[in-house]
Length: 84
Image 1 (spheres, rainbow, N blue to C red):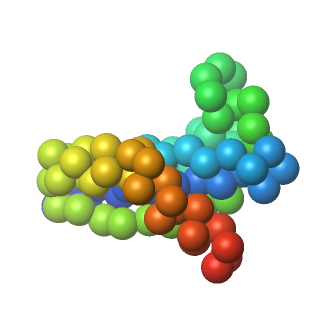
Image 2: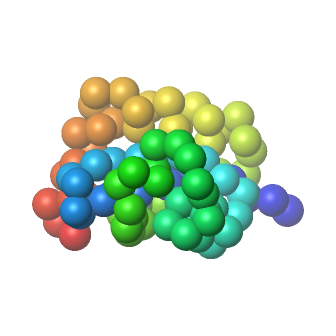
Image 3: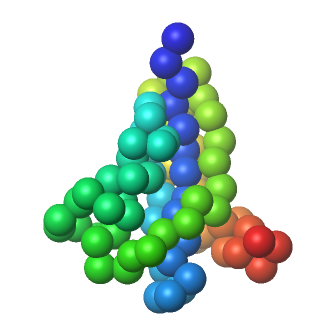
């Protein structure tokens, strides 16, 4: 069964956060740090995985991703940086 991961990446060098979803976190993380040649994450490498949550359906993961991208969700993610 495919699980969907909502993840937050953090760039300590630039103090940036990126939130996304994937069904293959290892591959997606490698893409953000090594393979991608364009997009938001290319400019702020290197990234670390700051936070993850798993969901059984893509719709649940998308809902949570949207919540984490809100102001309150970003505050929650920022609190993880302090405790990291």
